[in-house]
Length: 216
Length: 102
Image (cartoon, rainbow over all chains, first blue to last red; front, side, top):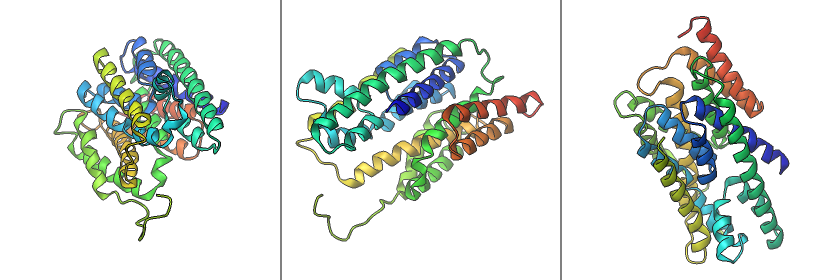
């Protein structure tokens, strides 16, 4: 878990520095990280706005990106705890990593402990990283001199790479990427990225089981 | 990036997260929907990678940018640490621009 927390801190620092490099004040990526606490959608929103897209497109793309948290919550929602406060705070800590850590435990008590430990550790390491990165980013100056416009897509590519190993996802992503590129010259920035979702029409679920499995 | 947009995204994201634990006794999503949600996240991120690698938001963004991102992608594929990916991408693009590649 320490390695995961360290990784989050480093990714957070990159997010902070790149955001400030793209012209945001230092406190805005910090506010995003505390309030949104979902790295992919933060990169997404800043990237769309940095490319000249509207904040509305950034919000819509971020929300679609975070929709995957709904099935996470349905799957492991019982590990948060029963009290309203535990549910509210616990929901904010619902991220890919804390879900994975909880699902790796069979015993409910240990699953709860793992979920909270991972969520709290990542909340602190992610936000500390973003703060450090944002402050350091202020010293950088003109982003294109230092190739920061390349750092941004490279960071997101690194985040997507594991998911692209799945052939169905990869095909959908390639079609979507082609649609976004082809429409970029003609549409307002941010819209082509949303149009890329049309790539999901070629997305086929992996296993078409002839009969439903007993546990489903 | 206006503060209002940040707060709307934050509120929406929290609503999505809170809905799961709240509704889990009443709702089960079909596997197909779960997989589509996960795939859509990847499709969106990858589309933004494509657009911000090849364009400056409107037209072709120059070879220095493209090559820099490709070097970063290669580093990520070779499982180099995240920081190395970012530094390699930025340094490549900056270096190419320094020697006059647009």
